[in-house]
Length: 462
Image (tube, rainbow, N blue to C red; front, side, top):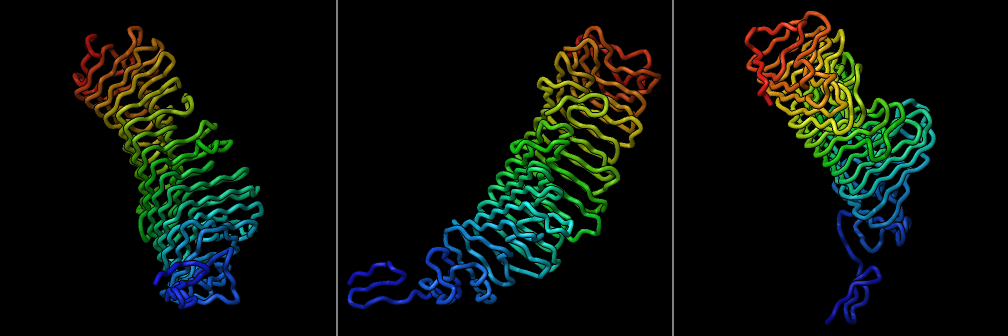
């Protein structure tokens, strides 16, 4: 006797059609479903809409959303009910709500979501002053795990932005190959963390405003981890007036965010930044990347750690901003094997005038071009360089290092200046601490090396 599957039932020779029972699953089919005749546990009697299937599902059951396109106006999450949605596209459009398709709406929800493409397009703000999002977690007791295929938010709202992921409490895990946050007039944010315990993993996180944002002002209940191949505010064109690929903006000194990526990249918009820590803010920020594009502006009072293999600027530096790192406050540890100015100009690494930064630069190589400016520039605070090779020999009008009022410390460093330049410059009398360091040219007459033999000068230094 042969059996075939078709028509919603199993046909066995001479036996007629039999219902397909699947126990604890509510099936949803946008094409073949019927909310009136649908039955939980019957694959051959699916629901037509997600909302009705969710209402019918009980704790411990699963809502299985078949491939197709579904338009929703509320979250598809329900406490104790898992969702399976591979191949389904779940849209939200024109809904004046903070929370989108994957949100707890302030309620304690524990569930898992498997698959699905989630898109949201909004043009009108909800009027509450809080930006809209697709994934939203606000209840401290929520525990949500999401494995999505895509999460994409497009906004034309005039005064507010949009978020792919927003977490301010609870436990959240999101894995999604592709996240895209695009706003035409306001700010777009890929992922944002305000509190709770969070883990985000993606192949790409794209935004034209801020890709990764953190702001923890109260005692943290967990940490936040972001892993991606590409974290990028350049592909979508950036934002006029500036975009920040990674932005730390919280005041609690015990909160910590870890960001790990193959590439971290900001756009070429004016004031664009690859990493930003906001003045007086104190969260701890850990950034690790194989390649980093764009200036890191470190003004926060907390701890910042940046580790990368190669760094390229996207804008020229100058007096107010360098090409790679500008620090005015806090304690920062920066390691980069290769600082490559490409064709950009300006100081490579700088502490600002009147600043209180303690900027600690580890091993690395910087070779300036014919138009590049000073390698290490200390105008305030403390700039410590260890095992750096700084070569500005291509430009007779600049120097490997300059001290204009801060504390400059060189340990195991090599300075290579142009034949017509000093190895270390200073506009007024300054002390420079040098230990086990070498230069091919003498220092400026305004510079006193402490201790006296800490900097060896030999024309053979290369």
